[in-house]
Amino acid sequence: MKTLFLLLLFCHVSSAVKHSLKIFRTGSSGVPNLSEFVGSLEVDGSLVGYCDSNKNIVEPKQDWVKKIIEDDPQHFQWYTQECFQSGPNIFKVWINNLKQHLNQSGGVHILQDISGCEWDDETGEVNGFNQFGYDGEDFISFDLQTLTWIALKPQAVTTKLKWDSEEARIKVKEIDLTKIFPGLLKKYLVFGNSSLQRKDLPSVSLLQKTPSSPVSCHATGFYPDSALMFWRKDGEEIHEDVDHGEILPNHDGSFQMSVDLNLSSVTPEDWRRYDCVFQLSGVKNNIVIKLDKAVIRTNWEKSSDMTVPITAAAVVLVLIFITAVGLMAYKKKKAKCPPSPPDDGSELSEKLNPET
Ligand SMILES: *[C@@H]1O[C@H](CO)[C@@H](O)[C@H](O)[C@H]1NC(C)=O
Ligand SMILES: *[C@@H]1O[C@H](CO)[C@@H](O)[C@H](O)[C@H]1NC(C)=O
Ligand SMILES: *[C@@H]1O[C@H](CO)[C@@H](O)[C@H](O)[C@H]1NC(C)=O
Ligand SMILES: *[C@@H]1O[C@H](CO)[C@@H](O)[C@H](O)[C@H]1NC(C)=O
Image (tube, rainbow, N blue to C red):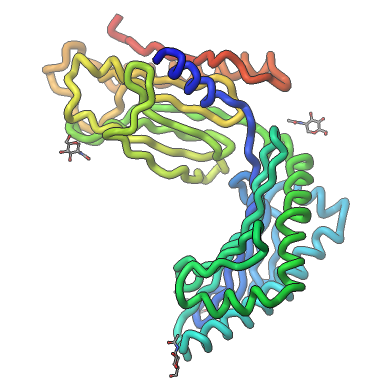
C-alpha cells in the first residue's frame, strides 16, 4: 500500500513539460458586426497573435513576437497572407458548400477550426491535431495516423468523403501538423522563452460560500496552464465528493482553477485528515494546504460557536503568510536549480495553525 502511494506521488512529480501551439480560425456568414474571418494563435495557452480580416489587422500580442517580425518580415507576410487571403477565402467556400449541402439558404452560420500540435520536451513526442466545428457543434476532425478525416456527426459524412479525396490538401495538412507547426512552436519557445517558459506559482486559498457549501480550494496566478490540483485524505488522492473546475485564464495572462470538496458527511474531527495539493508542470515542489476551519475564507460572520474567534484581519495575515512562504520556497528552488532532475517528491507543506 505504502509503495503504491509513493509511486503515485512520484508520478505526479514528473518534471516533463508539454508545450502546445494552437491556431483558432473562425469564419462566419450573416453575423452582424462579426468579421467574416478572425484568427488567433496561442502558445501554451498564451495569446501570441490575433487577426481580423474586416478590420484589416494582424496583431502580435507579445513583445518577443514583434522582435521575430522585425528580424524576419517573411514571417509576418505568412500571417497576413493567411489572415487576409487564404483564410477568409477558404472559409467562405467551405461555409457556402456546407450551407448548400445542409439545405441552409440563409441565416447565421459559423465555421471554426482549431489546429496545432503538442510537444513533450522530454520525450520529444509530437501530436498534431485539426478539428472543425460548425454552428457550435463538433463536425469533422483529421486523423494523422490514417491521413483521413473523421465525421463527428452524420451530416459531416459527405464533407469527409470529399475532403478524403483531396490528396494534395491532405499532404499539406500532414506537413503542417508534423513539421511546420512543431517547428513554429519550438521557434516561439526559444524566442519567447523568458515569458513563455516562466513558471509562476499561484496563491492558493480555501473558500466557502456558506457553512454548508463545499470547500473550494482555489489557485490563482499560475503559469503555464499545465497544472494539477486535487484533494487528499490521509495523503491519498480522493475522487469522491470532489468537483474539478476548469482551468480559466486571468486578465494578466496567468491562470486560475478550483477544486471543490463536499464535506457534508465529514465529521469536524476528520477535517484535519484532508489537504489540497497544487502541482505545476515542471516544478518540483507542490503547494499543500491543510483543511482547517481557521484558514477558510468566507463571506458569512463566523459564529460564536467557534472555539477560537478569528478576525478577518487574522485571516488576511495568514493568507499573506501562505503567499510569502510559497514565494520564498519558490525563489529558493528557482535559485538552486537550472535543469533539475525529477526529485524525491518533496513537498512544500504549509502548516497553517494560528491556534497553536
Ligand atoms: C453593429 O454595428 C452597428 C453599426 O456598425 C451598430 O449600430 C450596432 O449597434 C452594432 N450592433 C451590435 C450588436 O453591436
Ligand atoms: C436537402 O434537400 C434535398 C431536396 O429537397 C433533400 O433531398 C436532401 O435530403 C436535403 N438534405 C438535407 C441534409 O437535409
Ligand atoms: C532564453 O534563451 C536565451 C538564449 O538562447 C538564454 O540565454 C536564456 O537563458 C534563456 N532563458 C530561459 C528562461 O530559458
Ligand atoms: C454534498 O453531499 C450531500 C450528500 O453526501 C448531498 O446531499 C449534497 O447535495 C452535496 N452538496 C453539493 C453542493 O453537491
